[in-house]
Length: 131
Image 1: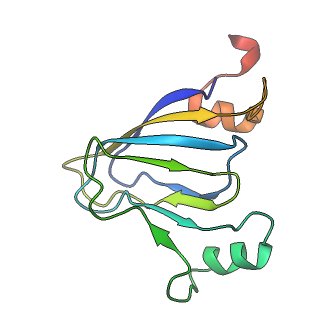
Image 2 (image 1 turned 90 degrees about the vertical axis):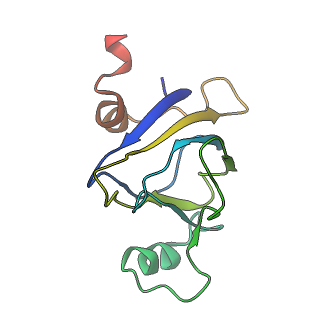
């Protein structure tokens, strides 16, 4: 579970600031919303709670929060180290077109990047015990 999955962000959907358990992921943009639904990140913020608090309070100096490239169009991709850099998807603000992505998570060791029970239920609606 959580090795390959699709995300669909419709009006009002987003994903708050977080770090990943997997070492890195490949994010293929399938469809972009015209408003909102942007991928943002704070580079090299692993373990730096001062940076995390600053970003969460939206008091961010210029250059602190980065966004996916504006030229990233459907079919474009990002390779990203989500364990080292806090990231989020801003809420989609347009009901005409949702943001859709395909995510491939990678870990260098067997069993690496396993997600917690809460996250499994939130994102996938089930646990490992249920199959």
